[in-house]
Amino acid sequence: MKTIGIYIHIPFCRSKCDYCDFCSYAGRDELAQDYQNAVIRHVKEFAPRLAGYYVDTVYFGGGTPTHYGASRLIALFDALKSHLKVLRTAEVTLEANPESVDVNELYRLRRAGFNRLSLGVQSLDDITLKRVGRIHTAEEALDAIDRVRESGFDNLSLDLIYGLPGQSREEWAETLNRALRTTPEHISAYGLTIEENTPLWRLRNSQDIPNDDAQADMYLYAADTIADAGYQQYEISNFAMRGKESKHNLKYWRLNEYCGFGCSASSYLGGMRYTYLRDPKEYIKAVNSGAGITIAEETETLTPYENAAEYIMLGMRTNYGVSREEYELVYRGGFAPLEQMLESYIKMGFAQKRDNRYSFTAKGFLLSNRLIGELLDAQAERKFQVGTPWRESDYYGTLFN
Image (cartoon, rainbow, N blue to C red; front, side):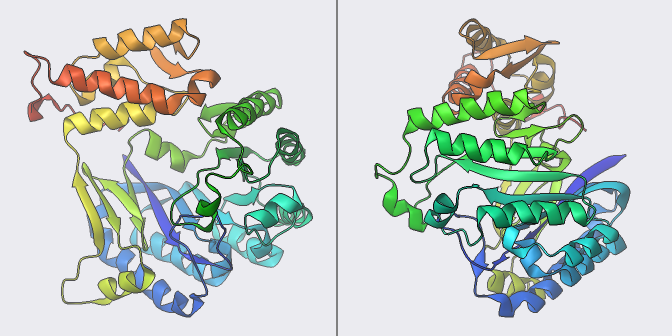
């Protein structure tokens, strides 16, 4: 049985946060119904290409899907179930922000089959929240968690960010510990990344932004504290109670196939990666056009070498890691140089080996960008060695099918 994950992008928000570089828009709600119709049409027209798949994860991301409204979300989910083979056991995730959590709407969504909720808390300090343009308070976030539970969701993830402007280690510790006391099933703890096209870019050189050492200290504190609370770190920024890992996000990290619908949504299907138009108005126009206007903004067919590089880059983000056997299923270029480097990381305390699989330790995760870059350099050197040419015939199939 071939399985696939489905991602639905909802680009609408009540307000735009200062750090947000995602495809999200405030003040464009007048497009919502046309957007709804376009996504449903897109699903219907694309469905025949997915006839051989069963859908085992669905993810409604944004933007703020709960701002979009329960009625539209349920109608979208009904369209998926009408045109695709959605398993009854599918993990169905919904993103939400505290200010858009309504217990009656959530109750309707839970009854319709949504069974996992990811809540964007980010901080539980009111001053920090204001600094980055969040429109909820800490108490409102905690109240939202209560409403999520009241509505019947028993699989809750909290998103938190460290390294925010003016944030101290003590403040981060307080946010983290208050969040843990609500006993969510999953926690995502992300380090702040300042993107060029966001309002926060103006502060990129400010003393108010915690430096790399301060962020590293916050990260290691989070990894230790969350682990002590009984969660397992299964990816650089993600922690879960046993069995509560995000099945949908694991598809990305394990090179499983997934298919997106909506503006800016990405897909990985049949060895091809493509991303749809970012502007919702242009996406609506392209879907509704009978004149062959392309919906895709970017397309890329990955070579076996590129698949192997992604296997290393994504696999080493997780505690599942990588193995020689799986690498050689993707690319017959030789795992030895990578293995030699991974063994050196073990000696330095950056990596570990369990059941013939290599993965990073918490200290390794902290340096993952640099270490993964070194592994990819080692792979590239092997590619161009005399006697080890890259060939299309070296491709032996996609991983984890």
